Image 1 (cartoon, rainbow, N blue to C red):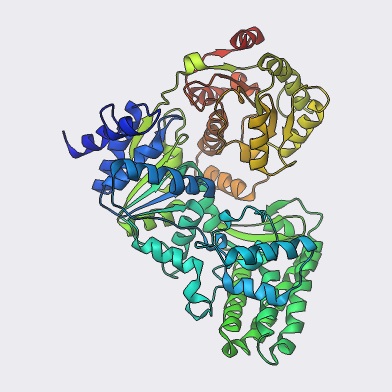
Image 2 (cartoon, rainbow, N blue to C red):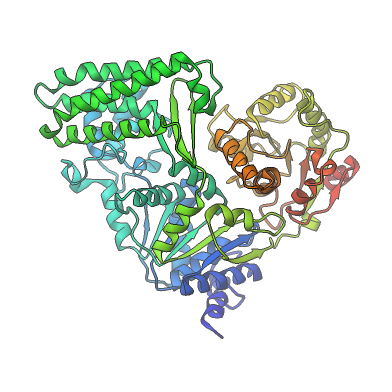
Length: 637
């Protein structure tokens, strides 16, 4: 038996997991993946492994990671998964293997309390409401007892509280080793632990931020590793676009002005120099937001530049930012804090000038608007080249895994986006018995999705399914508009509890849905993945339309145009494969356990009327299909 077989054997019927982990069931697919991961780590290979729901991919990569004797970084799609890995899965696997390895959890700095900025917030004392004042008192009390300083520990202060940005740091405003609180800094403590660890758990945001920083020559945050294991790897292409973009937002600019005044307040005479340019910058931010108020929520920068008022406001913003940078230059030597805000002002000024360049090849310039803010971006179209260069520079193994990486068994769409050349590919089917556990229902006689009455007709088709299942359903929509329309239509027509995205925090909605027993939950994008409801509480998943990306996305539009110019059909070459992977994610909410049973309702008539519909259906788990409502009723009878 070779070494890779031995590692697979640890997850076999005679292995320690079968003996020690309650309800552990040996799975051939899990053992095959463990073998492949062990070989990839050992040989420094690139592996792309699609592991269907229920394969047990977490143990399949943790076992070889912990037995490899090498330094491994495991990156996950979300902070919730990161915490689950570090606090639950890793300790369990380490205990079963009796492995003497150090493990560490490392998050982005915005997740850690900054003692310097907490001290500043207390000194400033200006808060928008009594709630924020109470929240600050809660954070101060917690700061005295926390060891890690991780926001996740403090559930009493909501994640969306405006206070968190005031008491956490960013790369721009961190004072580094010159900070008066440096010896107790939670960020640097976490990094020191990570530098000493054998296995470090991060998330894709931190990993990509680190790679992007290394590209710009600022040095690396994450310690070097022999292997990188990327779970939920299907999220990487979109996230990489964010991290290789150059962006300037209203929030960054207003925080710059606020921090400049806060730092100036501690240096005699600095405030009198900085007050006027800070106020001018804040006024310029407000003026630009007002000038673009009637524009679509996102679009090409060229759209914004067609408005004279927006062009004038953008020029004024550039001038006021330069003025503040000049004012800060005159004060920068007087304190480390002022030197820091001066560097930020220079960086943002250079970034804004770059975004405003009109002729740069290979980048898309675009804007997006929020309630009272805006962001301007320059995003590269080619992400494969820098990602490939970084992987090669690391000289490490790179293992990409997810339940949704292929399109009808073909991995090329995923690999091409990341610049993976001839990776080792592994496709592992789910061990669930979809032929017995699931049914795919394709309602007949629905209109084309572009028809005005489409959502009404979808709800009419779905109501008899909900009656057969007695609620217990997710209704997943491709747009918030359709979701809201469906919520209005169902409000007075169903006897079951209705849970609508946006009416409460996501985790609260899920918790209430699970406990309701017969609830109907309506969700959009964020409910299509990373949501796990096993058991009878969820027995129906309805998908209203094929999840093609929004046509108003300026980066997508530019990418499709570039493909067309290169002689590639952008619809079949990009839009269909991306939508297939998104559909697989949504459909994957249905069967989460060997005992689950459920019906997947796919409403979009294009699955039958268009040739590409076959590609979507061929990419789903092998479950029986029907057009007859009677079959659905019989399934639940």
